[in-house]
Image 1 (cartoon, rainbow, N blue to C red):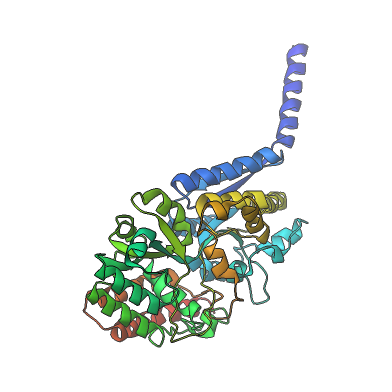
Image 2 (cartoon, one colour; image 1 turned 120 degrees about the vertical axis):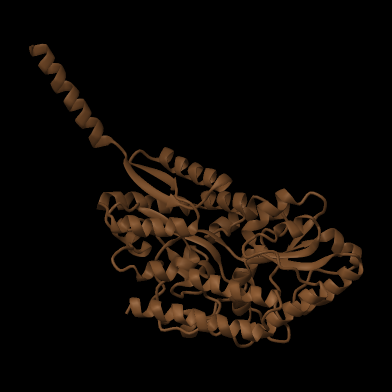
Length: 434
């Protein structure tokens, strides 16, 4: 009996000792499926192996919208993760979630974790910073639109990669005359042809510096340069220069097959383009600008997502989150993620390391997005977009653009309607968050 009691006491002490030394679990909800999801798991495994105090547990929660709405619901039920990946159009929603978000700059300070915002690309962090320039979330997978082109068909037609939209038109006409079926197509039409058109031409798409300066906003996309550009695209569609292929990346096969000679989409599409293009060599160029509208084009704006930290956990757990963010920002981790995915490196050091490793020399065009984002300082119109209900607003813009492509409305009519509908959504958001 005495022996059994001693054994039980020893087992209890051993279990207590084990529990005291057990690693603290950090839950990370994300929207990265497939190969990207596997890479996310790999990053977490590397962090977990680098120390014994914390275990980061990545959990795939579906697409961006599903992940964000799931995290909001979980927070209301007091079952929220420590970290959630939220796409850029959800920024205003996250900022308006009073008491739900633990700002990254404060998290790092509270955890006594070394943190210097100047280490990160300002064109990326500006999107996710407050009015005082403090980072609210941790950049993770940021991208920006670029132009992919068919080098073989360009060479056959004797044309050079376009810098301006005027060049796109001239090159397309020569390409069509040389037998091409389509000059160009585009992915994510609202992001590329409206939002980034505005940034490139230093033209806000909404009042209050695209929402950065307040929540009582009105849309401005029924004015120049937006109306002129969309009407030109409609004219180009009639001439065979432009072909619409869908709202997201549905148009990619038009480029992969060689039907459309140019394709505008995310810099993070590079890996997919490289894998899918089999019959020709492709190149990468900057997103075009209208030479008649601007002398010095500005930077494009980013897409992708950042990592937001949610309130409601123990301070010890947040120390683990801070350590993980420091690990995630290491040059070798960021360089590997950038090179594997095509997303931008979020730090200057990761860019320099990728350059030193010869990545850009071996993969021509992969540095175009970085140059496009860093050659000029962002302006209030090119810093980013922070509008409430922006997920729904993008749907409105897409619906109205499709009426232009179908010939049912002129660019002016469609964008007037888009502004009226979007302003209703902005008004609802403002009323709910005052």
